[in-house]
Length: 325
Image (tube, rainbow, N blue to C red; front, side, top):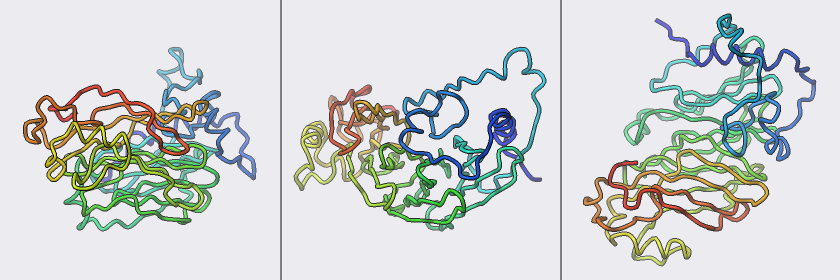
């Protein structure tokens, strides 16, 4: 029996409403810094994972209300295909086209009026090799759009830029390796020509980070680690020096955590990136000799300069994290 993803039907309905009065030009406008800054103000498009830099996910559209919601029905549906796991991605919508990603990082572009597939791209992940190293399910939480490109976080640790019109790969960068227990599941965010991405895997001994890549070339611009690494080596910066004082010196040999697998917002005026970090590992805290230790910077909100990745401040919500938050 074939299964049709529920969001596809809802998306089809929403896309039809979005596009009723929108003329699709032969040369669609680029998704650039100005467009991303203004995303969500009119409700015409959905250009980034949380709708806008503030991640509000609130659309100003008012076509659907209590007077007509009972008449809503299915406009079209699209079968995303097999793969297991849950559908966790937020579809993006630009110039009459819906872009989304399903399990095993397979990307597709659909005509928003008809649901007809425009293109589909499969990164051909080695399921046998990668599946045993996946922390928390074969999922993907979304894509990024910017200046003619679709940015894809591939679950095996690659960040790939696709041509927005054809779905053909333009560049590929290695963010992390599955043999090190990392996976990429978060939706990339794009700020001022940089693609921001972190990795999942904090149930295993991984070192959390947020990294930025040049949107045109795929070269890494900066990388900020959220927890210490090898204690036999000097810290990369002052924030890591402070963090090392809050960990047992042997803890990072069997765990660490603090992964960045979603939840990023951006203030373009201050050029500050705000993001949350995940759990420490292993847990509970006594397994890493963490009683009465903060274990910076797990379970924290961190602010960095978008241009350089420079640390500005943090606030730790759960010091020591003994509960797998």
